[in-house]
Image (cartoon, rainbow, N blue to C red):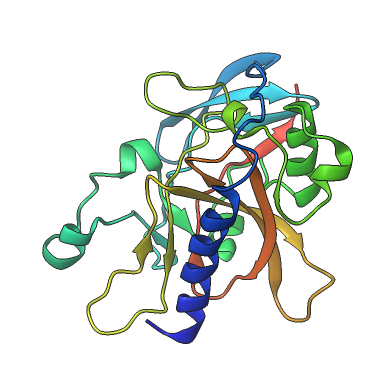
Length: 232
């Protein structure tokens, strides 16, 4: 594991340590239901996606799954599959694919787009987060339960904890990390407070009701994607 990937992994684990010790007694509010629902068919491969409406946007309610066969798109491989079956599609149906930010832009279906950081903040406020909290960095709010799907009680938006992929590995270690524990989702917004190609993303953890907002370098990373479009 390189220094960069170690920092990414350690930061994620440190955030668990910090958040698991606080806010345990916070009351979790009721889930926020979508104002409308529907389906969209990607004509390129025939995949049908559910969508849900919050505010003036419709969000895909499943992780995107289309591929043009390029290497900047992948399916999450479990550790045993990384060693023995790198063609496995076992996690595709549930978790979709993981995309570089460039691939997410390239493969976006017509009429849709990658959500901006502002789109995510507006969604979080629709779920009950304050505007002040939504504008903060790192863990904030108390709304994850209305955004993430667990077990047999999925919420409307149905975000999934599909992990992420990093190219920064050594020897035979797997670049697929944290499926079932964390979900990572791209935004299209560059972080102007940092030099270089840093873009905002969202992170969700299975055991905490906050939502993580921060930026990261985009090179050599793949995350899940949910597209949005203006409400019709």
